[in-house]
Length: 279
Length: 287
Ligand SMILES: Nc1ncnc2c1ncn2[C@@H]1O[C@H](COP(=O)(O)OP(=O)(O)OP(=O)(O)O)[C@@H](O)[C@H]1O
Ligand SMILES: [Mg+2]
Picture 1 (cartoon, chains in turn red, yellow):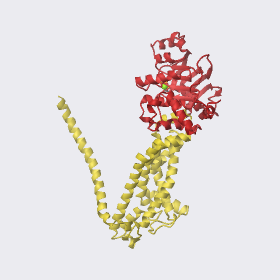
Picture 2 (picture 1 turned 180 degrees about the vertical axis):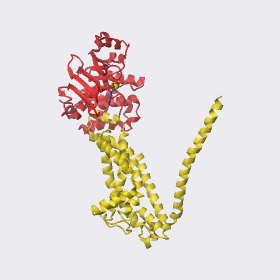
Picture 3 (picture 1 turned 60 degrees about the vertical axis):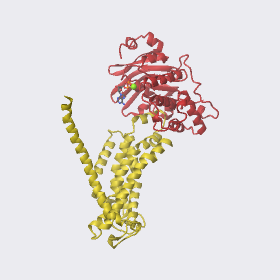
Picture 4 (picture 1 turned 90 degrees about the vertical axis):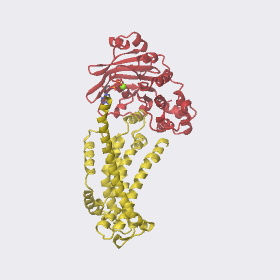
């Protein structure tokens, strides 16, 4: 059953609970010799990496090494940037992401993305969740209400906002806004969740709450998370990949299990970075 | 020490204070004087009959009924044409054309030049194009279309600015959720661009409703009640111009008409800013 069917089916449970666990490594996203150029300037080059189903993969590296750019290739947000050129190959669940003819709308529905700065729409809390659902063909009021409650509960926001779903989302605190954005992405039942430093624009307290939430999603979603917080990456990730700028372009230096990257790095750059000496 | 340092600063601040408030005061005073003059001379003459009756004796007596009708029709034609074209072009420029593209650059530059072209030029153009070439003659339709041409540059540019003021993050987050470009445009960008549109509308309508030069050659002088859009009709501003320049003894009615024009302007401004703060905002937030 595709996610769309499972959502629109008559008596289906919202399958937030039943997602793949990270056990035997089983690649869901495969990236092969991926490079990205802004005009003539390379952001990163020649990245080959696979992301395992149900696992949390942390992307770390110094500022400007192309982590955000890398994420935006996976859901083709790069299409929106004038002069941006991507080469290489990405396959997500056997779908050739970079093929010109694919349905990017469907692709983006399958790949959720959380940005560094919380970015709810200037609508009510309810509308923020309802609007994308309706766009994707879920029109049944009861079902929408149901999904709104499930996702808001999943991000721990339900009790905080259940009495004011009709008030503007922008009136929420930063941390609440970010959790709303996560709920908004989860409501579409993405197969992969991209998170670009989801805690870094928040105060320490909200940041902690959001981090706990992300830890809670672990094992239920395939998550690719960019973070500057090495301690956090070490705490929550199953796999880790280190990006670094070499010769003016970002490169993937080393990728492996989080345990291996943080405790037993092979590359001297990785060793230096994870021991906090550089970056 | 602190005092010797702060004193010249205080003097400077005081000077700035006087200059700023002086300038503001001057502008306000001129406006009040103008308004006061119009109200003082005109108010005694304004009545229901004045608003509805046809002008008599070249406008010295009677009212401005047909003229109000013509003015509204001209304005209606102007808006009906310029709003869709204006919003469409602004969307094209802001959302579908890159800053560097030749098309975008040329269009923007042309619009900026057009916005500064004197209205008499639009009048002559309208006369040559709408009245003669398209054969619409001196008519409300010709006048409205000419006004639309005149209003469009301002409307397009300020609506475009409205779209550009919408943060890029809206577009990215909408796209990341798999929303189509059309949906994003209609449900997120358009509402967010409404303030820019309204500014353009106020500026444009303000310019249109007070226009004489562009209308003299297109919608004409005829002060009878128009029966169709192809009839000639006299706009309020032309009526005022005619009464005060060509008709001796027309001053009182000119003042009264001017008062009505000012009230119309204020009413339009008021409605638009009410819309901006309450009507549309509510709609955006809750629908
Ligand atoms: N839209 C763009 N146009 C041109 N260059 C860009 C654009 N976005 C990013 N870049 C450049 O690409 C390189 C990689 O940027 P990117 O934002 O992907 O890095 P990052 O690893 O996410 O950095 P940070 O940790 O600071 O978020 C940088 O040199 C940046 O200046
Ligand atoms: Mg980044």
